[in-house]
Image (cartoon, helix red, strand yellow):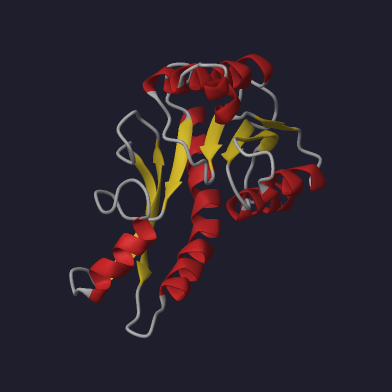
Length: 203
């Protein structure tokens, strides 16, 4: 193992959480080296963030696989194999990767894949978690929401929780207010969660 643990980050979009990770590695808050950023969208802005930080990038298109009459599982296996063969990272972080990973993808990794999810454990698993939390708050069903970083297993958003944090919701909040507050909390928790997971992997 190199002096610093290696990290590969998977993204699909603007990459603000990726930026938080890049900043943290540069500032020494996250004791690891991001050795690649993988995207499933070629115009994800996160790729620009990676290039600016001199981090190698790769893009994989699910559409291309489907056009070739291949399956989603074929795609997952190809991405997982590429990550393992080219990078062999100590930690894989999903930072807004908008595909649910299949058991076939996860079979290439030794319980070292981490995801950030904008809800507390057992609440609002899966897609549109922030919208669903906002609706639940408006109906009086919840008083706050939260975020978590967790280990990834085939069961969506159900892997062991590494860290979690409550996020307040206020009566005056618009959905956009809540989204912005959650994202600001995420930028801290993804870094803390990555460091905690790396510390645990060292043991």
